[in-house]
Image 1 (tube, helix red, strand yellow):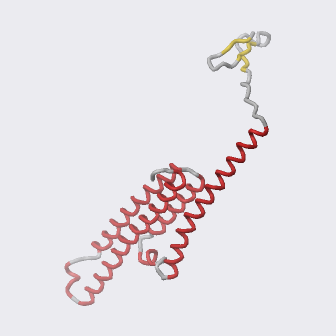
Image 2 (image 1 turned 90 degrees about the horizontal axis):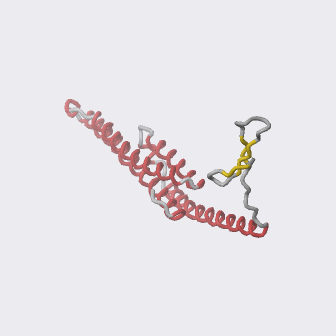
Image 3 (image 1 turned 45 degrees about the vertical axis):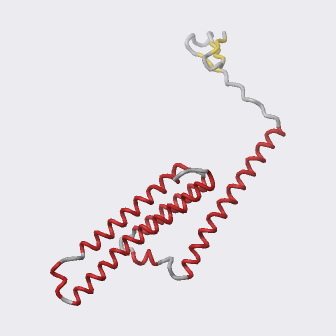
Amino acid sequence: MTLPTEDHRLVSLDMKRSPVRARVAAPELPVMEPPRMMERLARHCAAEQAFLARFAVINLTGVALLAAAWADGLLMKPFEADRSGMCYLITALFLVGLGAVLRKDWQTVRWSGNALVYLGMVGTVLGLIITVSSLSAADAQSFESFKRIVSAIYIGSGTALYTNLIACIGYLWLGTNAHLLARQEV
């Protein structure tokens, strides 16, 4: 005996084995004609190649800007000035976001971009904490202690400003990728 179900599949009841057991017939899959299937595959491949070409152009432009910063000796300054390691964390998160762009995982790109902004703010606060924790009124009595205070201010402000700078650059880079490649907002 064969009965139709709500989703238009046929259920056959096999009364010989067990009155309770029912077998569900597999739904029929639409059969595509080979030329139509090849045309669809060709469109998909062309779209994928266009995406990869745009991805390469956008990111090679960014890599060229990084190479120019490296040639001027500016690329490693944030990492050298940051004593907390936040710049390395921000860079790792940026690379995760860039990998997500390549996989077209726009939710992860959005999450990475937002996390970059928050990590930049955390780095700013951390830099200010480093600066303030090194200051005390008792140390301001001699010139040597004044030099130590200025050095602490330099280290703390380096952490504060460079982490924020690295996070903003990463956010803009990911946002540019998302907007130009998929019309997504980060």
